[in-house]
Image 1 (cartoon, rainbow, N blue to C red):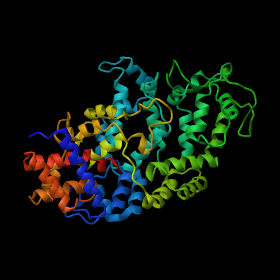
Image 2 (image 1 turned 30 degrees about the vertical axis):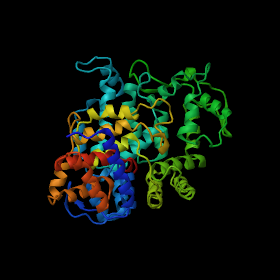
Image 3 (image 1 turned 90 degrees about the vertical axis):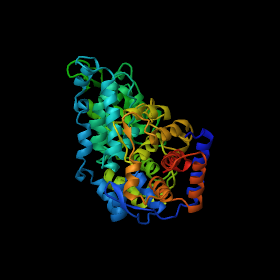
Image 4 (image 1 turned 135 degrees about the vertical axis):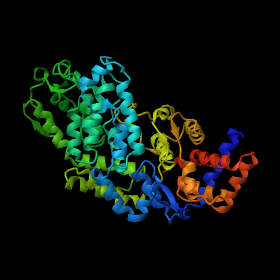
Length: 493
């Protein structure tokens, strides 16, 4: 049977209107293990929201675990990410040989020095690995933080040598310190060849200072645009950073300090007198920036925006910032404050394309290699490592509330198994919990994707609308599932 685009969008809108009336209704089933086996216990809308901020979309087993141990214990489990067995995800990534290579090896592969490789091999493997980790990893909060820091220390992968240097940066900077200490993150990023080249510090020498990295180090990485620095401070820090460079020959792509192009004069940054000491000059300033109160507030504001609301409560930011200062930038300690104090106050946030796509895939236990999904991320505007400016992908809802057509197309293609090497498990989920009654299955589908079933009258109206178009019961399930994913209700988390 066929369903017109107008009817499809009308149905999606009807789902949203019905969901708004059912926001406080209990979940229909409790999920245990990979698939639901018994009726779900009550699951408040606030808990559903919280769980979907900590993850890229809660799988059924994650929902069951959350219901079993509660918010605080669940957060602690996720913060202790190294104790979570992620063997199955790691096994999927074992064929991606480039992920663990050094820069000079990656550059050789990219120049076709090895059979079977080309310039796109390295960036494609990193993008695919990033997607698969977000989809399949049990260390969900860790992966959410990897995404957060990838935006914060954004590097555009299509600039110059970034197509192979970003793989090293992802491994040695972002993933290494995502739940560690902020000082270590900034320090590693400042010594990252990928960051040096992206922000042109390899062109920063005493005769022609380049301010790009110095400016973004203050404006985007530490203090924030209103953090109290001046243009003079940027210029002085740029002088400190002269000579911070990248090797071009032997051990290509490694960080190097070139004394011969370093400005050896005295500098003053934010009132700090910096005496001539080579590479230690900029390192001294970086240490000051990391511990500055403006940095604490800036970082905590961004974290609260990501997890809590576009305009997070000032009191929450202040408490988190004080924790940041008291713990010398311990990321786990700051997250405890933001998540435990902030999630009960969280406001709906519009899903960025990655969150939208992954939430549908994770909730439906989709099996995929991820390749077919990258085209949709391009069309939706969030291909991994593809944001050209250093501020990273936007984190405000209004930046993404458009370009809906690719989302609708994805929803229908997913449910109809029209994506290459991609298969959802909706039927398997329903087979475990089904009563054989269509109405119960629709309740299960809406509970799975929206956190709660629709009111009975609304549910029956939707079923009747689909049947009126000539759909079988199997097609009705598919159409309703696709309509939910395409609906305005599913665009929010």
